[in-house]
Amino acid sequence: MLKIDSKYCNLEKIADSGQVLYGWNKTEEGYTVTSRDKICRAYYQGDSTIIDCQPLDDDYWAHYFDLETDYEEIEKSAPVGDDFLKDALDFGRGIRILNQDLWETVISFIVSQNNNIPRIQNSLKKLKAEDKFFPDYIRLLEKRERIATAGLGYRDNYIIKLCEELAEKSRTLNFSGDLETAYKELTAITGIGPKVANCILLFGLHHMECCPVDTWVKKIFANHYEGKVPEWVKTPNAGYYQQVAFYYERTFK
DNA sequence: TCCCAGGCATCTG
DNA sequence: CAGATGCATGGG
Image (cartoon, rainbow, N blue to C red; front, side, top):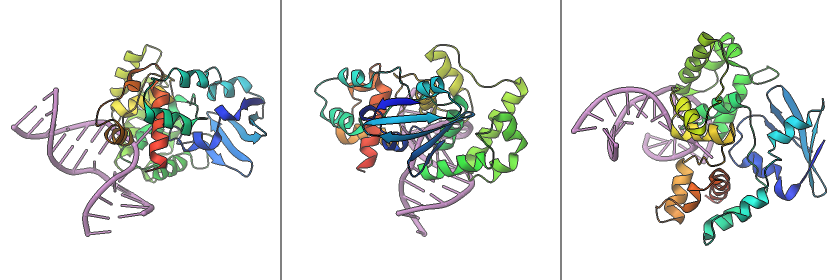
């Protein structure tokens, strides 16, 4: 069981921050969270956030919830004199950048393009169907009818092509090289462009300097920075600043 | 009915 | 290189 100061681990904010499109389900006490073949319960107890898993797998979940990172320190290192960022950091305090499963993240954000969040989540649920955990490429190729009926629109071919290419090489996705190499390998996949690649790098591979620029972030630049790119975009923790800014802007759209 | 959604691939100049 | 366009689908 993990016990975290809830000030820096707010379950609702994490669930609604747009980084996680699969695996979080609301319950009476809080959430159940699945990742790969693992599951935990997450809820509050006093001023603490509790992560409780059966069987015991605290190391996995400690990494998933990114407990090795000091978010108070990230806040302190934010560029000064930026009122919008300061407000976003206050509003989003409690968000953490999860270490999500790479495959789940890749599929989630391929599905996310030119799509809305409820539809994305619905499609991912349909891909999982009655399976216990999110299907790997082998399972998806076995269950092609799911891909056809998941409401994926034109994105279905991106997923089929990726699964078939992995099957041909008989290997799962992994990006062991540096950031630049991973970015090139990701954007070489049909259906993955700069924005989706940055989401995968940030949410699946935990490159905190990556800053996905989507329609909301463009709105932020336009509405709060006179159309210019703010300083925080090019800092080592840009991914976190992007996430709280996204959450802040989208909440008060 | 039109417009949009955590964009991308493709084509054109 | 930058800019324009089509894309599947469901919700507002």
